[in-house]
Image (cartoon, rainbow, N blue to C red):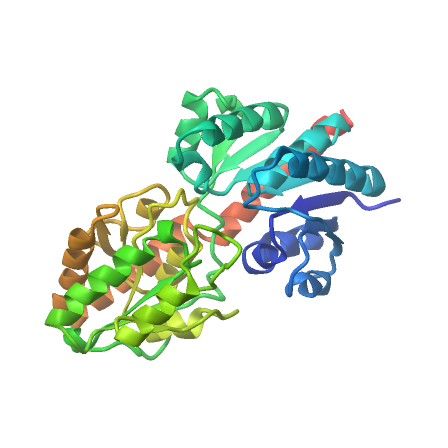
Amino acid sequence: MHKTRIMISVNSSWNIVNFRTGIIRALKAKGYDVIVAAPQDEYSDRIREFGCKYLPISINSHGKYPVEDLKLLHQFYRVFRQESPSLFMGYTAKPNIFGSLAAHALGIPVINNIAGLGSAFSQKGWLPSTVKQLYRFAIRGSHKIFFQNSDDFRLFVEERLVSPNRCEILPGSGVDLQLFQPSQESEQNDAGDHLKFVLVGRLLWEKGIGEYVEAAKLIKSEFPQVEFQLLGPVDESNPASIPRSVLDKWVAEGTIRYLGSVDDVRPIIRAADCVVLPSYYREGTPRSLLEAAAMGRPIVTTDWVGCRDVVEHGRNGYLCQTRSVEDLAHKLRQMIELSPMTRAAMGNYSRDKIAREFDEQIVIRRYETAIDQALLARHA
């Protein structure tokens, strides 16, 4: 008797290794065969180490060319015919759209995860309306559509892109509470004027990187010993990414300390006093904030889609206005002026909030239920 085969597709192998290992391990533990279809990168070999079958597939996440997308649709169709999965799980825009279209054409049940809407929905012109139409057509036959925040769910319902009775809201991607734990011995600074702030994320303008740097300049004019760190990859292929020349200029001016890109962010978060993300990108629920909060760090982020779900203003951090350097600097200044005891209490509340609301096991259980129902419906 063949095992039930579940295929997962995401727009990068990096995404699988960093964000989807929990659900993959859970599926393997239940006896499913797991197939991963994702673009090849330096993380692809690690997918095989999880006991999964890995299939390279070409996805241009930034591409806006119909011919490329038709080729991607054909790739998915060919892969599904070759592997005959019992269920398809899509993450990120193009797998959700073109993978779902191919799966529906072959009668394969689909579970989608709308893990944020990125820049496509915030632009003007033909692109947002085209993407909405593609979503409407692609996921209308899906068994379940998961959203990572209520704002995205509300938008899809108001735009009549989905039927609400097939949708659920997940607490982001969840976070592994065993892996991301507060340190036993605090490495945080007692002196507010020596704090270390860190921004963790892809170096995209919409992540609020520019505002973070400008706010850092204002703060350092008052508190020159405060350190502003930046951790994340530069994507030269993405026109929305921070150019390396600009990043080098900020470092040379002494405004920020660039830490590059690492596989394990825990030592960086552990050494920081506060994690900052002034994003106006259409986040799902930012993983960097979930991990920081799970490790007991206070947060400064924007009152924006996904970001505000992680922070209760004044309890475990501060919410600032989007695109406002002045308000961001004000909230950073408030963090600096707190007593060490109050900052520690904020960090403790962060950990408690994540344990209550964002435990990865919550996400896994919801997926397991949806998978069981989808497979049962297909069999019936």
